[in-house]
Length: 124
Image 1 (cartoon, rainbow, N blue to C red):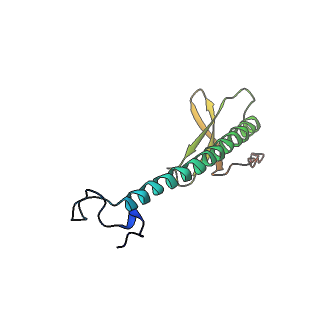
Image 2: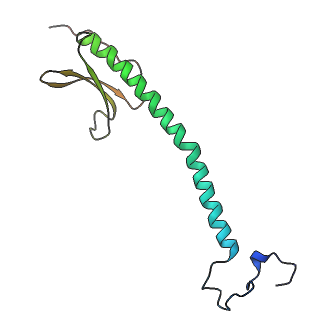
Image 3: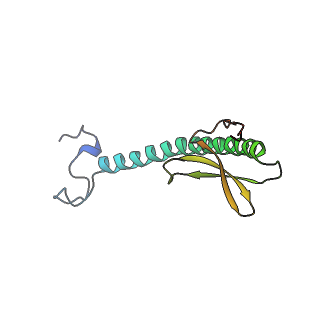
């Protein structure tokens, strides 16, 4: 290598060992730092977006659940929204009415909740 080459590309920096395996070159160290900076920047952009999306979906689910419980039960019946991933038939937000004998499933709102489908139940 000639003296015109950048310091990062020279094999031996001042005071270095002859075997290049024992330490990381400055170029590789700079590359690692840039990777970490890029990762932190990416998380800094995606994390607020994800939290905002979840917050909006949670608020929409709570309002939809309140509408469904008011329609099927009385306005005084408390409601509860849960985000569930375990149940295969109810992935996403689910709406429960809280009764004295336990929670009753009222509506499955899905991953992206919207207005509930309120169907009048008739006795037949």
